[in-house]
Amino acid sequence: MRILITQETDWLRRNPAQQHHLAELMSLRGHEVRAIDYELLWRKNRNGKLFARRQVFENVAKIYSGARVTVVRPGMVRLPYLEYLSTALTHRGEIERQVQEFSPDVIIGFGIVNSLSALLAARRYGLPFIYYWIDVLHRLIPQKAFQPLGLMIEKAVLRRSDMVLVINEALKDLVVGIGADPARTRTVRAGIDDTIFNPAVADRNAIRRQYGIPLGDTVLFFMGWLYRFSGLKEVAQELARLHHTEVRLLVVGEGDLYGELEKIRNDLHLGERLILTGRKDYHEIPSLISAADICLLPAYPDEKIMQDIVPIKLYEYMAMGKPVIATRLPGVLREFGTDNGIVYVSRPKEVLTRALELVRGGALEDLGAKARKFAMRNRWQNVADEFENILKEVIAAGKKKSG
Image (tube, rainbow, N blue to C red; front, top):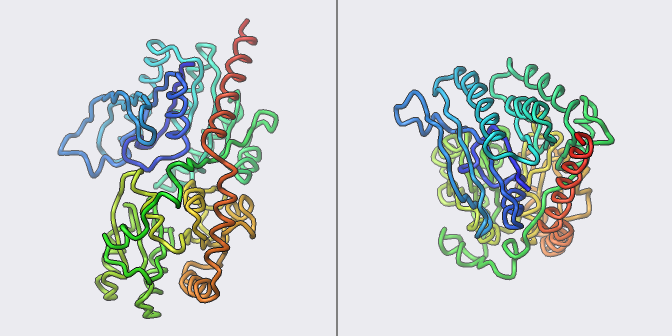
């Protein structure tokens, strides 16, 4: 199969997500995969250039050795607001070019505007189109005035897609509620690679020594993009207020909140109790998780962006045998329930108190075992089998329809 993926985020710099795993696994199975992406972090990387030229990155493998994904980045104007208009035009042209040159068997959209362009191109050339939701994208548009337009586009694409895939059940309810056909909507969950995320092979003590963490200290861990609604600010402030010097907060990632966390560390004299590593390579993540005692998802429970999603990091935490403390997010609660290694709190500021209760109560080992058992239900190879079969089904149905 020749698979064309479109998305509106940075394939190279952002943390591996559903599309990265599936694209690379498909390439390892002999399929050709191309992905059209967008330089999301252009403000940090502009180098004084007003216009970014088209770039092609060959044989990209973020996760699996030997994977060969071609990433195409269309040009864009690096100016606020004009970035959107220029990207809409260049992505539309690039999709047309890829249909002509690459001749994909199926197009899979993960974005908003370029998913509409991909859908329209698929219709012109008689190709099947799959809309894959791993997030509620219109809620992530930074300019709130554009969010209704984003939702309108999403609804139009959902109604006309040959298949809609979602990453969890809460998202399935959402997309069906705004226009997706229930008969053509399926859930393909996130997975886990238990050869990488395996507590038996990670060196917990080496990471602790690297960051100067005493072996007996309790480490709370978070990884991923540092959104302002992540709840980490409140956790850090609570850490300073309670003065538990034997508790550390280890944060792996970059993002909007990073500078504010640095300021909190300095102003509240947290020192080495708040460890900010910045962005780390994917293959370093299992060892970093292994150094933790409890992993966190303390996002604001009333944040709309978080209501219907299940971050892939939860599966990775759990596969490493770590209990998780999360705020009571509807999508997470529905996906994992209350007896699979996740403990819920109502607000981010309750995280530290709950963590200390679990440590003192000797509950970590049992919760971690439950978490790993749950995560092992969804190995990536099984998820890839399901995804590959859906692609074949959609392509076959398209050929039957055109024939």
